[in-house]
Length: 312
Image (cartoon, rainbow, N blue to C red; front, side, top):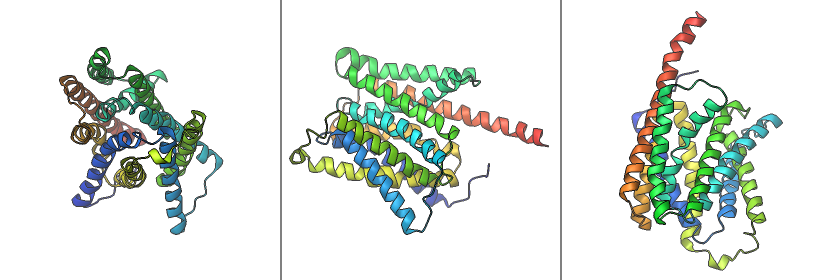
């Protein structure tokens, strides 16, 4: 695999800061959006609009949109897991679960990926298993007290758990499925497939039949526009650029910075409480995710010399 191309420190940290802040803020934006907008329909419109805008950008630059059926099917499959199952369940959960808590639970996705690796028979070291158990302990610390005392909606938490598993499956199968070589084009097809599915499910849930545009608040509409432009296009473009110009270990730090940003923004702009259980759970989850990412990177680095020696 080619090493990342060099980039100036200012450009690199600007892109990384964009991913940190924008993706961390999307949980707050979703909470604002679902205050008055139909959750699945608005999410579907978000991703359909973003996918169309990306395709339009390709056309204006004279870049091909061509892809084989297998590539489109692979991208669509990933989009269904990530956007319909992952994001769709998140927007449903955020109607009753605080945005900061949502972000912290979603931060457990890397834990589920390790579990999936073990399910298909991949060798998973004891250190990674320990990291998963630590992360699940953090989730328990975070959600069980709130579920028992009634401050967190158990149904919303169950939906959120389903979202993390779906997102983990999408992330896990993504490199195992054929997709367009241009990452941004693959993302466009993911968004078109996932957005279309969200709209269909939203209609089946009766969201279209109960639409009342007069009830849409300005705050919700602005939040939806923010999610389209910044959450779905700007931040992902920065993320794609980072994967080409920065070490993966550095890029992966967004996984445990985003929830911290989300908790702070939720407290500042929505008055979401930061309880001792949230602080303790956040610390344990972030520590577990950081440990897993670090061990995975270390294991990859350790295996590379062996591969090189075998090639010799």
